[in-house]
Length: 105
Image (cartoon, rainbow, N blue to C red; front, side, top):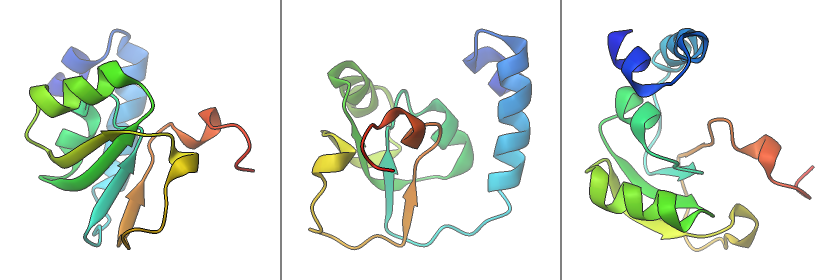
């Protein structure tokens, strides 16, 4: 919990993320993993040891994940709507992302 409190500006957000993390830790993620909207990577680092591919539309977030963590094998600046079926994934992880992508519903 202390790592979450350090990662989030608001204690209430850290509290919510704690229960989210505990729920997700009960699942076995099939490989390879693709993360949509990698952001800072801080939450995902608490969940798994490695993610093969990650994308984000924000170039700042992409650069942060490329240089600030060893979690990701490959990080690309890409809109999720532009993904092509170039690779099959066992798990596609999107934490607080899908609701921000217009036109996917």
